[in-house]
Length: 261
Image 1 (cartoon, helix red, strand yellow):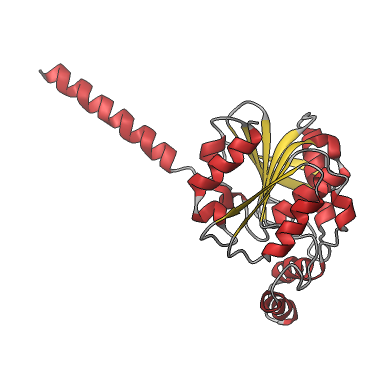
Image 2: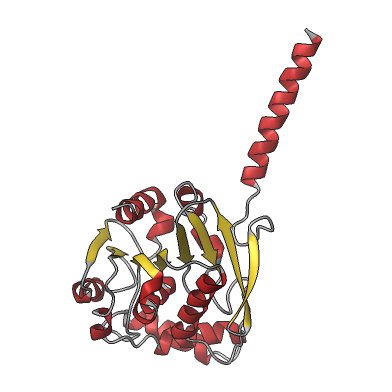
């Protein structure tokens, strides 16, 4: 009886320990999964989870790897997930005096080369979606399939509300705004500047997504979809810009269905 009790306690202890270890994962700050790569003059931070075909995840403005906390546990069951902190964000380096989406796309292409990955699936949210589109335009061989959510290709009122643009302008002009935040907001205020015709250069399949209450205007999302040679469109109901966090199960299944076609 005593041996059985000790065995039972040991089993319970192992279960509790394993559960605690799983709960303890902080995406974006996980030393077991984190790495740095010397890319384009900076140290680019990334974390790897799972195995299989490579899938890179590109977060939104100011949002580090942790922004995909609901996506990584799902997709690591199917792919080798490579979640990246974009230049000047999270744990990645970068100069506060200059930043562009083209620079970030070049960083991601450089990381794929560094990891000896010829091509990958790409999931990008918001700024990450912009990066994904530029990656597919400038480095077409590196993108197998691309899924973007809440992306815009121009920074004006045809894509974003005047109120959101004004908020960015106030942040940039505020003398108390930290230098990094000023740079990140300035980038959104004046970038990207992607001609619609450039989208025709993307020949990989693209899933264009947004919430029906997204900060990106629905007509702009629709025009991006219509400008792509091989695209699917998904507008999530009762959803805002952060649909991947708001409705993660639906979002994840939608993206996985697209990737696994």
